[in-house]
Length: 325
View 1 (spheres, rainbow, N blue to C red):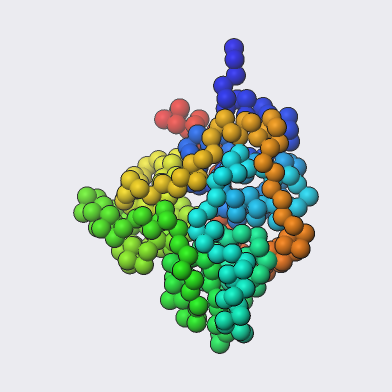
View 2: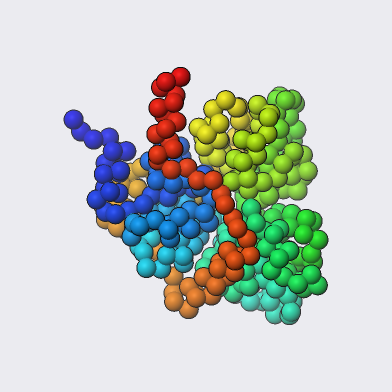
């Protein structure tokens, strides 16, 4: 009997000594064959910790680049090199250099959704989960902070950390496609549902939310809150994971438009080809690597980010429980 493509991928990964990492926003079938599912930075950390010497990163370019920065001795590959991040592309090292010239004495905090070159020019990086903590702990209270590239997350940090944040006007098109009227309509349709919004959303959407959380925070909050229904204001891929991990609860998307086309470029066929050919390797220049690694290391020292990951073993356990039920 011929193997399914899923079985071929798992067999190839074992033969090649590869680990498959998938971001929460990937297609459901990509999440299903991955060894680990999670947030971008947590996956990069896992890539460093696992014994496999080949990492297949199912996400967008800055994520695979971050995995390479944390694991320079390993080979990191993307199934589709055209899977970029529009927000990360909104800030370059040249633009950041001009910002630093304009604001001498200001610190620089770079969201991990940025290129290696931007990270290398920054004092410290942050994730959406730890951005407030990093701002509060790493920088002196009176030091202005240039925050790049996400204006929404930067404004969120400014409000909660009570720091002078110099905002850059980058944004996530997918999160900004979620409109306040979408959330209001969803609340009217599902009056018992709690609203959880990602800090990459527009401020008006965050104002309507019961909770503002990173994707890992959304998972924790949905598990902890006794509510049975949730309106999830982030990329739709997360709902697959939420439904698998918390099948007794119901999750709604406020919009049909909050789908990241770049995240969806990764397919099972492309993953199989990457495992067969080792195509699309990720490279980071030594000089850039040193600066970017230092900024990420400072973040790790400043915070203790612990995002919940899904492993293949956990998914198998859920399948067995479902069969028993």
